[in-house]
Amino acid sequence: MENKTKPSGSATLNVGDKTLELPVLSGSVGPDVIDVKSLYAQTGMFTLDPGFTSTASCESQITYIDGDNGVLLYRGYPIDQLADNSSFLETCYLLLNGELPSKAELDDYTHTITHHTMLHTQLDRFFEGYRRDAHPMAVMVGTVGALSAFYHDSTDINDPMQRMIATHRLIAKMPTIAARAYKYSVGQPFISPRNDLSYSENFLRMCFAVPAEDYEVNPVLAKAMDKIFILHADHEQNASTSTVRLAGSSGANPFACIAAGIACLWGPSHGGANEAALNMLREIGSVDRIPEFVRRAKDKNDPFRLMGFGHRVYKNYDPRAKVMQKTCHEVLDELDKRDEPLLQVAMELEKIALEDEYFVEKKLYPNIDFYSGITLNALGFPVEMYTVLFALARTVGWIAQWEEMTTDPTQRIGRPRQIYTGATERDYKPVSER
View 1: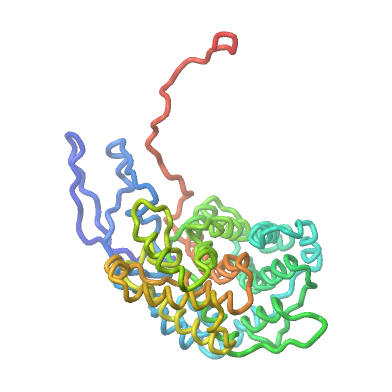
View 2: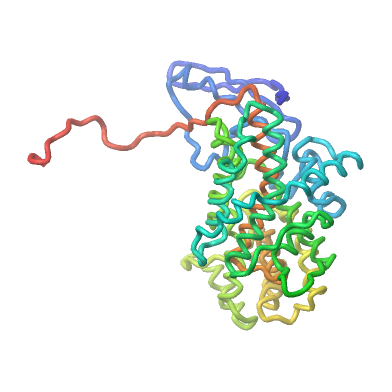
């Protein structure tokens, strides 16, 4: 990766009797950064930044977020333009290669991914080792981590060709693995992918087809699924992406790195947020109970929180939520599900959040997790599958970030520092003297 940061001045730091001039670097857009990598060598001190909220861990050219203004760009393209006009595989190509493909390039890439969707037969039998009631995310972590045992011919990270093959395999096989995790959880036979279907059509068919009857993919639902994948494809240096980069910095193979990302995504504060949002709607239960829960959300002494509202990064309306809201309503209309109690609760809660002074003032707008949870429920996915679908979509972002990190000449193994507050040095005492 060609580094493109530019010096734009310096910052003066006074530490004791020392005065340091630290370089200030500028990217193509966004805040400048103070380069502190020489701080320890010059002062013997570290910086402290829990959660890395003010620390840039890398240089990247993939995704840009401006949370204050509600902006999300993939390689410079606004997320709403891609969701409305692109396909998921075209977006994958963009994230991986930096530019939108020509028709010939897209056709070739689509053919490659489509013809890598099958799983090794032995890998199919691998699923039988899981308990029937295993959470689908547990199945995803274990199965993706095992891919390196089945596809060991694409684990040499120093070989560009092997990296590319691993990339194709992960993007192509993730829907098949996710669909099998679902089928296994409900006790239905696996459905093999078909080469005459699109990425999203194939996934829906593998999830919901049964051998007893033909399955026709609804084009409205397939388009919605494609948009969900696009909206979740990447999101800068979030927890799971940072996990993938940190794992990759040690030289771990790509399958192990993506498995690490899936494990991180499983957390309820990250990928599990859409699952939490739907569980909250179920807890509310009916429209007449909404005022009670809204009052609780406003009460500082009540631990209850409205899930699916607000976002750590976006201090404005989540740009993905605008697209997801429209997609959500399209799916509800297509399936004629607007009268279901759960969805009535969601729609009324959405209305309150957009109009109530408390929510508007605090910018607690409905986020993508709120709308995606409703949409996935309408599509027929159980709540346990929501984070699996997130992992499926985010795979391309993780791989793009991993590839960028692997080819970055400035990359070193990740080694965060700490401020130690434990016991100072002390002598060991035999157990008889304790």
